[in-house]
Length: 137
Image (cartoon, rainbow, N blue to C red; front, side, top):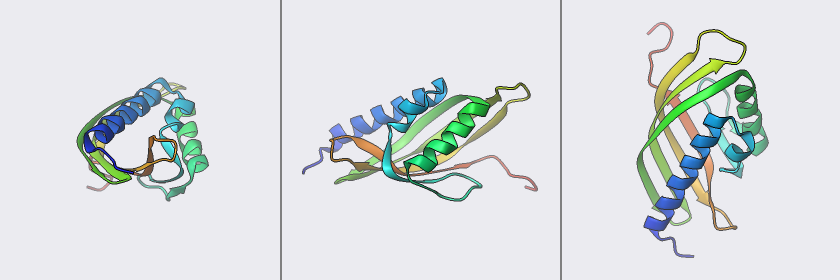
């Protein structure tokens, strides 16, 4: 199968936008539509998560406890056959649903997407980290 880079990049940007909107709305099912079944997630300060069920559990726990506001900027998308990567930055505010001070973060991410048999792109490997100084910095 031949992958048209411009078409693939547009599709990847659409998946990115749909996932970002779903996260901000707290729509777990719509968010999970962007992930491949065999996804591996590398969240900051946590062990790697293997598979869609593990990633779903992470997001479900976060969305149960927090309302999420997120702004994500894509800096680069590159396509190489059935694989692609997306690199960018994010700003996030987590407001505790039970009240209290929000948690704010900003950082960078690098995601790898894989072309699926159904003709869609899905996040296959996801990684992000904070750009804010940690404790003791």
